[in-house]
Length: 516
Ligand code: BES
Ligand code: ZN
Ligand code: ZN
Image 1 (tube, protein in one colour):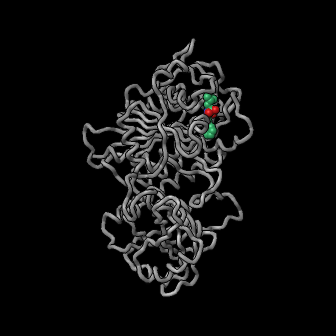
Image 2 (cartoon, rainbow, N blue to C red):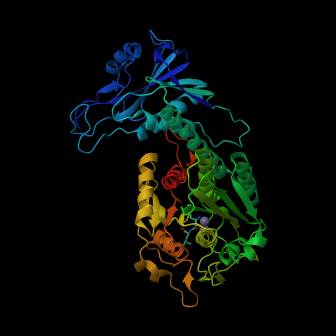
Image 3 (cartoon, rainbow, N blue to C red):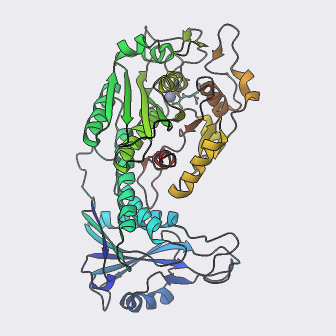
């Protein structure tokens, strides 16, 4: 999809499909909907306003209304898309109430996605979209959200279908009522970079385990690094053993597929000599059978996405390489399969991690924390002063938070605040859960330093986080458990079924928050 930001009157654009947004500006909870066009363009208002009152269009979020052959404008079709309620109930009209606006650029990200997914099956290839005008939608974040939402919505998962129809959008023009300033163009470009990186990760996550082996993940990462000028090393088992990564090595030993230890580095042009070094660490299990503690057959196919944490970090590096923040960043991905065979590690085994800690294996299905233990330790030896890891780590995170919020655990409030500030920019949802030392007893072992699994149903996401915490020392650290949010089982009006690409935008913003 080519994307263009253009200052032009929306009424004058000859396009198969012109998109205009509307919000419900009713100010009380029980008042009837008051759909209002968010454009001051007189010709568009003349063409569309009669339909706002004569139909049951209420401008709820994602609601669409198509006007074929609209009068007085150049577009062949006009598509109205709802953004939902503009004001929080109780606000005086046109003024944000004490709780602020209900409408934010985050709704716009979704609504832009609705436009794309409306056009695709109708084989409309060229779209123009008018930037909405409303005090709750400042131009720069709105433009960025539109770029993100559109590119994310143009993704589908049917790569391997012989009858696959290419429905992708060829060109999208975002029309601005004001001149396109450098700041607006930058916001637009940032949205494109972030969403394209997110789609890069979604493509990796969607790949089946037989195709995306650890070796293949290494190859695709190296190709991306070459394209975007990142330093990249892909190490084999020999190096993993040389580094004494006994936890990582134990997981890979049941698989005939060679593991890959991937390291990416981003060096800014003028780094501060004593500035932070951010370490991004990803769980890259390209297929998780559970190993000897084998998983039930139902849904095991989903375990191809057990490398989503790795894909998120690689994709964040792809975005960072283009956004060029003035901060050093390195990325460590530990990738292997978790398979049962005669060589596989077993419950009861004791393994020694790179840090020197001994781990008693209680359950070979708790493998993600093992590879991350070595990845987190290795990132510190490479110089990381701050750590963030992403992993499809536990089913328990879904029990705790469902599929709306992903889990966040940390040993440091300050870096967590950086992450929260990043969330406000990206619109992603993470919820902090405890990883305090009163949970430490649950991973005590009688015969080694720690257990890799407690065997208890209680607090499974936290006990996994407690395990990781053993390997970060005092380094400020964030653990993101994305197990229940990385795969969408049902499509949304703005998003395909399948890999969501969660965490990439926020990890990238977290990194940028350390730039000086
Ligand atoms: N990859 C799984 C976690 C997972 C579950 C991801 C569902 C996505 C969807 C992880 O390796 C795992 O199997 N965890 C176990 C841990 C248990 C053995 C302590 C789990 O969650 O059941
Ligand atoms: Zn597992
Ligand atoms: Zn796993």
